[in-house]
Length: 126
Image 1 (cartoon, one colour):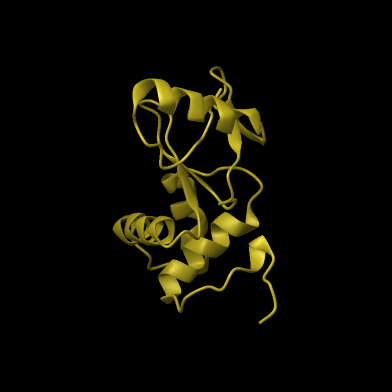
Image 2 (cartoon, helix red, strand yellow):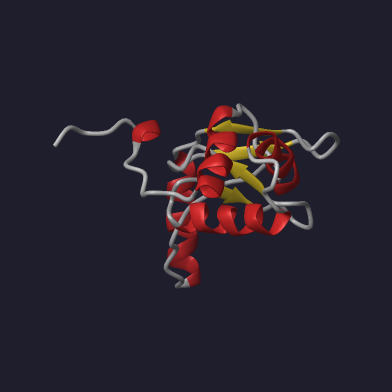
């Protein structure tokens, strides 16, 4: 079996609504909120509801097809990149940028040793 590129992961059969939501996220360079995804998905499927977008986002996140970025009390943002990477968030405008800091993994391992917790994932947000 040929190895798939990270953007070509095998996608399970999706409903039209879930497929529309996934395409919106994958076609964007930024990290949209559910509201922004809803607006773009309505251009593809005029009858799609806000609840369907939220349910689709939850499904896509749980299936590992998108990642959810939570930042304090702000609205979650969604990322087409599901491989481990870090984020910087501007406190003035809210813009979110990707970056990779491999040292974050070592930092989390050290924190796990000191706290006696077993980390399930490592994500650094600045």
